Length: 193
Image (cartoon, rainbow, N blue to C red):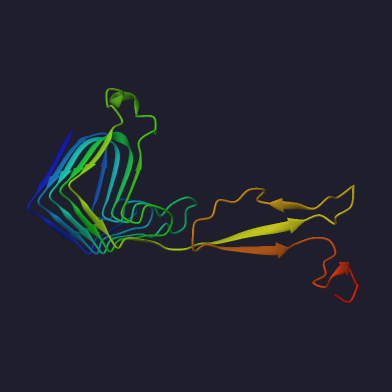
């Protein structure tokens, strides 16, 4: 399958994945086109490429958003999200796009195993002659619950046990179980400090 898009304006579109274009297991050639104000509810505010051989050239991507609503680990690639394949991005202007997870302008995951019919794709990514400016990854709030009572039988623990945070994220600590005190000293017995 082949998709060719040339000299087009793609604007004000909304989709579950790839606000204006979702291309999967195909050859995708996009040139001299403008992607403006498109929205994806998951990945790729303007475009999502899954296991493709793609050449995206001399295009402008601006004001696109990858929301990531309703599904865990979504909202990456404010303009473009790549899942595997052989992708070349050349001569693009990518600006003022927003992601709610990662890759304000572009996110490429080239290590994704290709679909069975596309094993011949090399999983390469090339970005050349591009201007990538003023893209944003919105900060997140991560909740960590403290559990347990601090005894040998029920030691303190945290859920999740590990957290990955990016600059600007907020980590909210919630004391969910056991006794708790905000004063210095043993719980419920201040030492006056």
